[in-house]
Length: 222
Image (tube, rainbow, N blue to C red; front, side, top):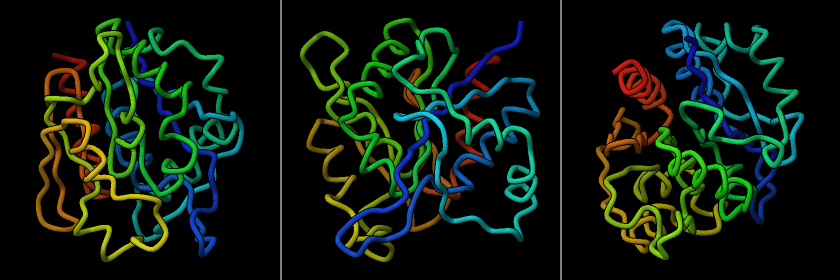
């Protein structure tokens, strides 16, 4: 039986006081998609508003990104389903890719939070990469405790943000995750790093997209 992963992707194209162009970060979708597709795992796309999803960070010298841009999957992504009309428990896992856009419309979004709760409470896998873990903030799975409290995870680090978008983001993601009790860890800037804590899988940065895909495959096939 084919397994299915739901990517929850931002609709936001601009962020911050400088009106910085943003969206989802292209390799954080393209790279895990490539790994999942090669493993015979189907991917579907949803977003808070449905429809078009702007992107950032596209590198045409990366064959994986170029192939995804030209794929039917990319066309499906830009006709994404509206998240409120999707039941995350129908999927074997969810993945929240990063980019700066999620810090506008993914964080503290009730539909995103409901998707995390539905996935987790039906024993599915929850995963996120780079700025995507902002979608885990404020989530309560029903016990009154922050979802990430006591869980091992990673995300884009403060050191990485200082060199990238500190003047454009509304808060430090690493600090916010720690404030809700997460056992946060990271490695050197821009190096691949994936943390697996049971059914929670997180990656630090764009270089971690492939690793998150591989960890998802291992968990789904295991």
